[in-house]
Length: 408
Image (cartoon, rainbow, N blue to C red; front, side, top):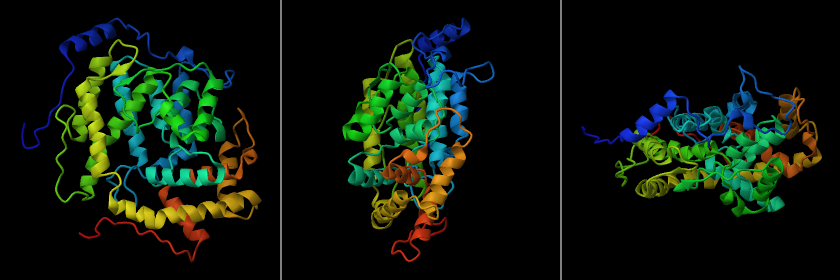
């Protein structure tokens, strides 16, 4: 197999023949979510037609929200590097979409719904990745006793702030994606309607553990959830190696799922399809699951929490979060129209929602703390750094990016 000794598994002949036979007669998957099942807050609007089917509408709405643009400058894992070859959150959501649509296509699921969930799942993510998310949650909790989670905030952006009248199925898949928790089986638990959905969402703000109890209501949501992990396991290793995080290339231990990005995507896709075709849930081989779990654990030890990036966050960015939060909270309470908070956040929200005639809500009725969280979570990395410099021109904290040729 050559120097790299890569291993790519294939679907069994039996499963391949079943899939081809079912495709030939256009056999539907009884466990897929049909377009006709779509549920919206306002069913009189966004009715499907031939050229804009139900969940295609959701995807187009998500992609045309200005917050979607900000994926391109939000940290996926590695902050403060001037390097266009490492993954930003914009690429991550596309990878999740590609992997999950491929699994969904083989399982004959609703790939339009899968795409909508995948492209929207991280739209509420903070700048500076999960470190930024943890810090923002800490500050929010200190002031309100409530917790911040990026997947819940993605729903807040799309459903509350922008009021897009997205489907329950899309929003449910987004809030339940939880790419930090791997499972051997993914069994959907159907939602009754928006009342139950809203109760679950509110519970996540009040109870830190509630987020771990969420289970997607559709198989499509389950596919996105597992694909979120598949999309970053090997890619994070690839990026870490590209940035020189390893003095020597580490030896990862997986023998079935593989160790490289390409192997992991191929082999996990094959194994999930092999064990899930024709079933009402997703599953994988026990050995594959154990390796899948261990791969994430190994990434945690070797990549996530790397002292090189943790130190920069701890010593500079975390205290910048604290100062920005307090400054913006003061402005949010006063609602002085001359402040940066009002001009760059309140006016921004008014501008992007001014043509929305559906589910119209007055943004200023939100609590000041919630509006500050909205503002900070919506920032890109560079936006955050520039705003800090503007509000604290003599501030003690400064961030230096690692350039392409630094140390080379």
